[in-house]
Structure formats: structure tokens, C-alpha cells
Length: 295
Image (cartoon, rainbow, N blue to C red; front, side, top):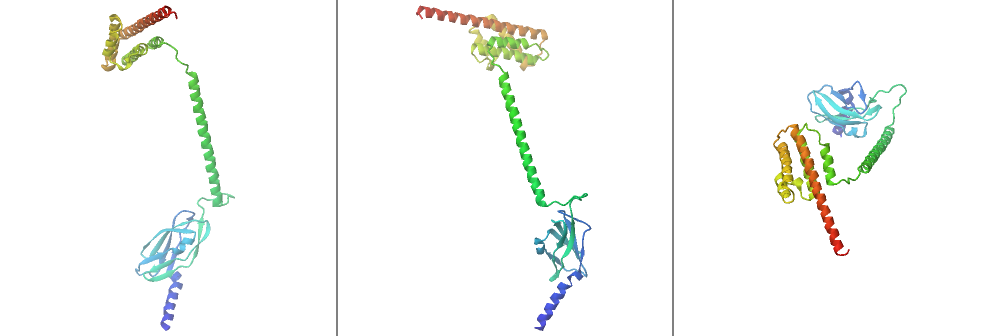
């Protein structure tokens, strides 16, 4: 019984004398939601192993991020989540197997930003409410912007469709109009590329063979079957010059460019006359057959 009482007295003596054994070093200023260091200096330290229990901090205004100790000084890294006077709870510090329990003490927590004049601290709930309304306002503005952008884009497409009229020109009229626009001789390669495309496109549209996908040699072979040799030769000359300019980067004089432009125009005009005469003959034959059959 006597031994038990002595042991109890020793334990009580250790716990009661903790504040006489530990010196608390507080920082000059503690700010809301910003980490700070709180130091506990062990007086009469004799090289014991120091550890700490932060269990009591779980229900306080402080979160412990970690601790370290050096030469009898225990340093806790903390973050406060309250403003004003907060009570720092008692914590248990162990020197080897000896336990020291600190007394609770008060710490003053300053706002993160200094208040001016008659400003008051706002409740965190009011801040959250403001943020919610701010998010709603931003969402409404974004929806409005997207709607206006969609409407503008839709109107633009509608106008584009209304502005572009149907092209009722014949292949001959399209080709001649394009050649008339071809008056820039500054870039030989570009000039001949456009001239070749105009002539090939006309042949394809008017005579139903894929001239835009055929080589110059294939086009000439196809034309020999249907047209006069003089017309075929002129077509070959224009297309071969175009090939030299496009693929061999051959530089022609401006006089040659102007000559080939007029030659292409002549070829298309003569081919159009041939096609019109052919259609006229077919129409006359059709009328004769209808007349003969009494239709």
C-alpha cells in the first residue's frame, strides 16, 4: 500500500510540475489559416528522447502539420482556423518514459487581412453564400455569351446562303469569264496553273471525260478521236507550256503568257462552236425522226 502511494505521488508530481519544466515560446503574430511554429523548450534537458501526443488538437481550432525536436526544443507546425482568442489545449510531451502534460493557454489569432475603419468580420457562411451567387452569375453570363455567339453564327450562315445565287452559266461562259480575269503575269507558275485548270475543267464539263485527272498526253489522245488536228495541236502547246511552268519551273516571257491565254480562249471558243453545231444536228435529226413517225 505504501509503495502504491509513493508511486502515485511521483506521477502527480511529474504532471503538476510540467509547466515548471517546459517553457512555451510563442510567435509574435499568428494569422488566420497561415501556418506558424509553436516551440516548447524543455528546461534541464539531459539528452532524453522527446516525443509528443497531439491527440487533444483534434477537437481544437488548430491542425498540427508535424513536429521536430532539436537539443531539448520541441517545435510544432500548426495552422489556426479561428479568429480572435483561441485556447491551445494541453498536450502530452514524453521524455523517454516520463510524461509531461502542459496546461491549456490562450493564443490570439489575427485576421488574414487587416480590417479598415468600421469593417466587421464576416461570417464564413456569408462568404460561401456570396461565392454561390457569384458562381450562378458567372454561369448565367456564360450561357448568355454562348447563346449570342450561336445566334450570330447562325445568322451569318443564313446570310451567306441567301447571298450566293445559283450559277446558271454554261461551261463555256464560266471558262471565258475565268480567262478574262487571268491578267496577272507576275507569277508564271500560278498563271499557268490557273490557265491549265480552266481548260481542263471546260473539257471535263462539256465533253464528259475526266480531263482534270488525266495527263496532257492522255487528253491529247482523247481529243484526236473527235476534233481537228489543228485544234488538238494548239491544246497540246498550251498544256505542255503549263506543265513546264508548274513542274519544271520554266520561266516564260510575258508575251508568251499573253499568247497562250489568247490561244486557250480560242480553243474553248472553237470547241463551243463545235459542240453547239453537234447539238443542233442532233436536234434536227430528232425532229426529222419525229416528223417521219408522225409524232
